[in-house]
Structure formats: structure tokens, C-alpha cells
Length: 112
Image: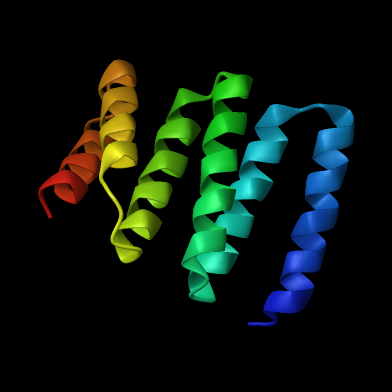
């Protein structure tokens, strides 16, 4: 529950992954930063981190993690009263890779 220390640790890890150029590791840290901000009810910041995580996962070729990050982004955006574009993006990626649970989660966000 020490958000400040956790943020500092994740930020240091993010710097390390960016220096190595490994988008796979970067995507995980970005998603953790998004989760941290969501738990602190900082939804605008959380949405930024989840969007960056989805982009890094795409660069890494990790479509499953991209779909997960997009789902988290859509959930945060829902808290902000925003549109459903990222839920639709998550649904499309989930369908492309055959991730049935992800498709269902995205559809629930689209209808809810």
C-alpha cells in the first residue's frame, strides 16, 4: 500500500527495460504502473499507463498481453465515462488470437 515507493520501483524497472529495448518487459512494467494508479483511484494516469502497455505489447508481438492491457484500459476508461473504443479493440485482438474469455470480457464492457 506504499504507492510512492512502489511507483519509484516500477519507474526504475521501466527505465531499465527501455534501455535494453525489450518491449516485452516494458509492457509488463507499464501494466503494473497502470494497476498501481488504478488502485490509487488515479484513473486518468492509469489509462495512460495501460495505453502504453498495450502499445509496448504490440511492439513485442505479444497479442495476448496487448488484449489484456486493452481490457484494463477499457475498464479504467469506463470509470471515466469514456467511450468503448478500447473494449472493441480488445475484442478484436482476442478474437484474432482465439482468446474466448478475453472476447467475453470485452463484450461485457461493450454491453455494460
